[in-house]
Image (cartoon, rainbow, N blue to C red; front, side):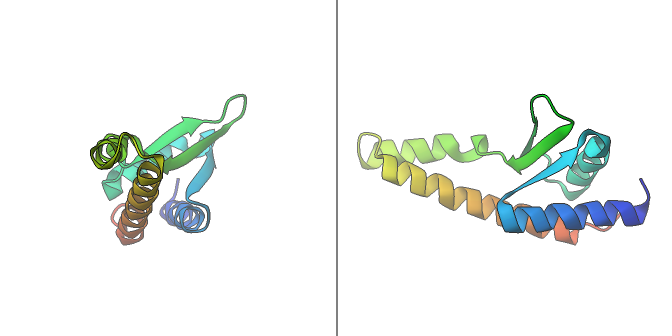
Length: 111
């Protein structure tokens, strides 16, 4: 994949993440997306899942990185208060998404 194509891919992913909170790409783009995430240092902040029965992959924030923290917070406040848990997960997801978008927009080396 050429440098302008990688930059276009990055821009498309950033646009999708900003607008929808996730991005979809094809199996043909898998290697390029992986390279992009690693070069931005965010490959552990996102998860890639194959859409069953298709050639597409879903890229989204990996909530596993903070779900335990949110669950523990909810348990401390009340016996697993669902509202606190949901609020925490939404807040952390938003923060993580913004961090990922910021790092992706800063990546230019190798593109």
